[in-house]
Image 1: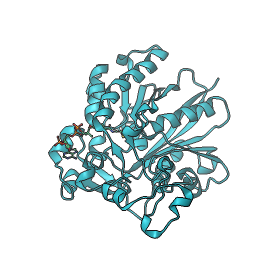
Image 2: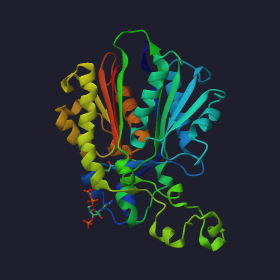
Image 3: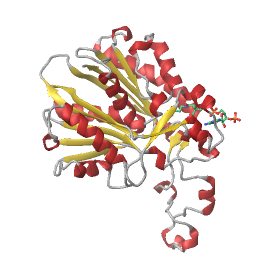
Image 4: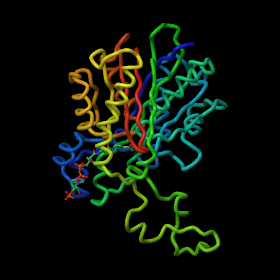
Length: 349
Ligand code: ACO
């Protein structure tokens, strides 16, 4: 069977920098609190009404496509990972396809949040390995800043997230033991609501709109987005931070060790570990558990916050551009997030 490899990688982050001090002007928080608990100093916010999740994805994709030595017309499948799409439907994959003129090829949207990039990598790997596709474009992009609660009520979530996009092109390679060595995907829906964007959604028959506008509630049997729900901020993401933190520091090492064991390696064999940028404290705890020195772990949450599905390709691209991921290096990617979902991949670059 063929192996697949990352043949091109790119990322895009919006120009607008929002510091912790900027957030402290609009909600009750502080630079000290945010840095101490998360490591974040600043993040980027996309320009509303000009940029979208798919336009950011397209910018990252153009770089990845060029670096893979192909043109958009040669891409034969798109995978788009995001939890903050342009529209509720259709998915952002077809919008990216339209923007880059790649009409006619398949476009798959996946919703695996922070693990979305590695889930997408696994899908791309299977398509390429089986010989079905030769150039799969995988994009992770997020526009969080348009859906956060910027009042003090939402501060535990809002200070963490940032906007951006990363992309890779996956191609076949004939070289033995090169490229994507394995991917490992997990989920536990038991914790679904601990980190979730719940409303509007079918779970409660919730419609957008309020009772005021006279929707025929009885006839359709649903409940409406009431004024009280608006007042309570029920349409913002909900996160039980400590529950996420606790499980993340267990599942990260578990899924990394699973990847190492399957390929016959130890943590000390790694040249670079690129964790999903959830929280610097989580990354540091995992680093310690693996016994890795600082130069073998790439963290950039300080500059970009948590960009969910985009965070791994942005960090991997930065590490590669800085010359810290080189030909022949053993690289580990790992993620944990909403679902809960968690995943890892081992790559021989
Ligand atoms: N500024 C100031 N104070 C705050 C803020 C803030 N931004 N946010 C919360 N606080 C307060 C709380 O109100 C609380 O106050 P109280 O003690 O008076 O009640 C206090 O700080 C402690 O709150 P905790 O929530 O217990 O703080 P914790 O130490 O757990 O840190 C954090 C919160 C940073 C969210 C942490 O739990 C965390 O990082 N968890 C992991 C989150 C994560 O990784 N998410 C990524 C997944 S993303 C995805 O999949 C979409």
